Image (tube, rainbow, N blue to C red; front, side, top):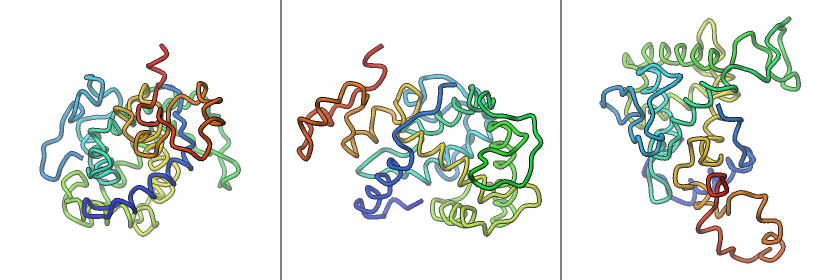
Length: 243
């Protein structure tokens, strides 16, 4: 979470670390600028495949657009998050098999869990995301008398910092857990997944970190170019290039 004035090296290091955590993997397919009106379709339809929202209402879409624009502000490294397709990725993942919890055990019983227990909620990821978003929006209005999507960049960034640090309390949702365990991982995946899943538009994050793309075709290149610049990193290839 940074502003447009942050130095490029800091942001590059942040995204490199995010790539390591995310493992450059996508889940199975399934902000607006301050003061801009909520949209029913992503702000840049070319980055969003030209389609409307499948999971989000207009207000939810505006919230997620503000989120990804704060987490990924436009600078010399990438466009803003919406133009990178990040909000579109959120929508499609939550509208698909992942959002429906098709690989999760949702029958209970549920108990207070340790991290090693994995997902321990009766809600699907889509439902959990929406419940958390509603609670976060209520927290934003209580703190700023405005919705999150209407906050300026600095205010929205500070709000997310407090939320992630567990300093914003709501009676029904642990917002820090919601952000750390669901929202931020989706953001990482949106940045570094294969563009076929909707995010990482034009392979912008792969180009930024020098990732050549589809790893199945790079076994020999990893040996040949170990410790050397790899020419193919300038034009990474996705699943789309092989389908």
